[in-house]
Length: 186
Image 1 (tube, rainbow, N blue to C red):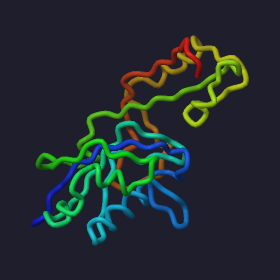
Image 2 (cartoon, rainbow, N blue to C red):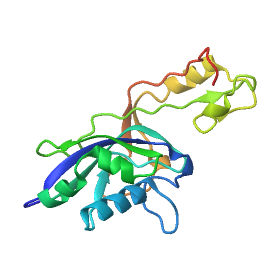
Image 3 (cartoon, rainbow, N blue to C red):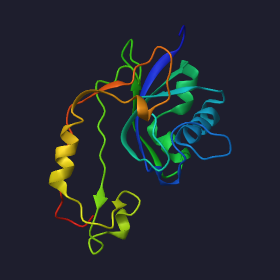
Image 4 (tube, rainbow, N blue to C red):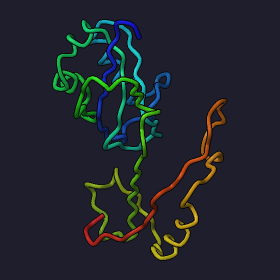
C-alpha cells in the first residue's frame, strides 16, 4: 500500500433496482455504479472493498466500504458531495475519511444489523413502503415466530446459506433476533 491512503466510506442505497452488490456482466449493481463514478472522477481504475455484500433488491442504511487511493486521486474526489452529484439517486455517500491504520471494511466490522419488514394486513400496506416491505397474505403469529427465532440465537453454522470458500468460516453468532408488530402502517 506504499503511497496509498485508505479511505473509509459510509453509504446507503435503495436496492430495489440493483441485482445485488457485486459487479455482474450486463446487470446493474451497487458496486458497479460506485466503481463507474470512482473511475470517472479519479481518471483511473480503482478497487473498492465492502463490509458485506447484499443480494438483489436488498437495501443498506449503513454500508461501509474502503478504497486505497493516492493523494492525487483523493484530491480529484474532493468530498462526498462531488461523489453524490455523480452517483445515481439510489446511492448516497454519508461520510468519507482517512481510515485508521489496519482498517478493513470487511474484517474490521464488529457486528452487522439486519432489519426485515413484513406486513400481513392489506389495509395497512403503504404503497410508499412497497419496496421496503414484504407482504404476506396470511396473518403472522408473532409469538410463534419469536419462539422459532430463539433457536437461532448463539453460535450457528450458516453453511447452507453461502458458497464454500477456502480459509473461511460459515460460523456466525446471532446476538439478538426479535419479531414485533408495529402499530403504524407497514
